[in-house]
Picture (cartoon, one colour):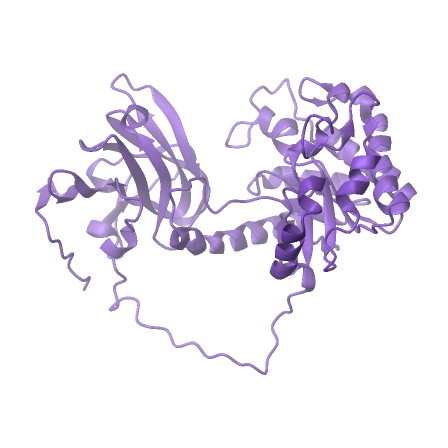
Length: 437
């Protein structure tokens, strides 16, 4: 049996749906999803209240929950399984406003946080909508509102030890399952383009103390004018890289000897058209990227092995053309994945002409769940792609606790498994390394 909730303040039960604890300002308000379902109600002894709301259709509502009276802002949590959900506000007229996605998809019941929202943002009601990804038993169990940054809803629903007995784990120290390499631990060196930082002895000492095996030099500011932006590496007037500043930045930096990965995130402003690279400038951009390899590896002899072309351009070349479910927004307007792949291929050939020892990767995808994009990009760049890189995030809110963030690391494993399967299907017979950077 589940352990009872022990409350030190008044407990009010509203139609079996809402629990409040606290006095003038409630510590939390818990709403059972099945009290206002927008899908089938399924009995489950592991669910709060013994039931949850299921939803078979992607992008369909799961439950509509009233926003309780109380403070001027609430942190919103949802207990979900096998599904990712979006939080929306729902006006009296039925108008919906998107507030936040949680893209993780827990294998078992788990609380996910949508962060803090003001009452003005939330309105009188909120709607939880099912996302595109779901497992065999997708469900929404409960929604919780709390004003406290420290409150953890896991404490309300302790594991049912009768149904989930303790598991005995045996560790065989003599058996090696897998080996971590030096570059398994990496850091984003966000200030790695700024010579005022990289020449600072304290920065150097702290980076050495952390000892990451590979540093990813990434900052969108690198594409800015070197005289106007601290991280800028471009001489805009000359339409070239600022070789002098690059030398100041990299000379002597990271003496403890990590591998370096340099990310070229976007396109110089004079080469852009409608926020993307002007197709007429692709070869010029390839030469531009090759020039950076010349400066860093030939002139400065830094020997940077890993180079990453573009950053999160899957949004501009794929996401901008597709609905959340994957279908094209306008069938007459196909996406531009092939063009992004063409950019990468031409850059790779030009950069390897300068230094054939480098490893080229990309596209530093913003969305690990866009598997169609991943497969198509990898297939189109297979002859030049040494690693596939992508991003994922444990949280979109600074209000989330460390525990909440650490608990969600298991979803990164799921991202990797799905991407691995998509890449194997797209490029059969070859295992592309995954860089989760």
